Length: 111
Length: 115
Image 1 (cartoon, helix red, strand yellow):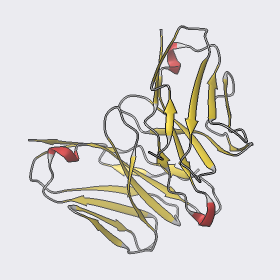
Image 2 (cartoon, chains in turn green, blue; image 1 turned 120 degrees about the vertical axis):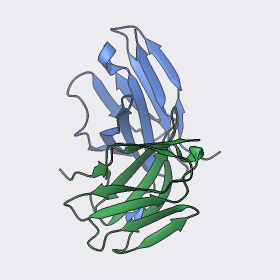
Image 3 (cartoon, chains in turn green, cyan; image 1 turned 45 degrees about the horizontal axis):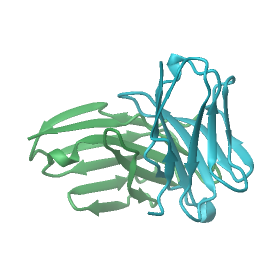
Image 4 (cartoon, one colour; image 1 turned 120 degrees about the horizontal axis):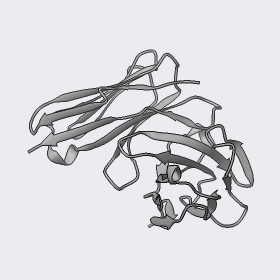
């Protein structure tokens, strides 16, 4: 079983602060997705990273895929209360047909 | 709206009744996944289906739970003789599957409450 470990599990910060959350595994993935889930809703896909070392930016969010394609990070600059939610990473392996999800990081941004 | 649709959004069942959860994938998607989520927890994989085939059911409880994705119509997750421990949010996701794309698009979930 391929496991994805996300850290920290919980993070509470003030509006305007920066933060980084991590997604680590001992397995190599062909692609990795990040999702955000708000209370009462389904997860929403934020980004897919495919190439080792790849960096993608989505406004204040920066996603990085590790060189060995085993880990990823999500950095948020100047966090806002609207960033509050559960951030999930999911790794896919070629021919596996399904993705493996981490347990998520619950982020709370206080105004 | 061509997104993943799930119904009902909320379902209340008494212990011993059956629960049927429905999922219509995004247009053009042939792969469907079911997940279960308890409060304050992540998603737990249950089953992965393609049209008329169960590909991976390693996350399904051995008893009372079943899933199907018929040639026509939505995917169904069926829970027989529900117990209070079945209370959770159940999410369906779909993906195109072809071209090695495993990006999953989620529905809004069905919140099952067993009384």
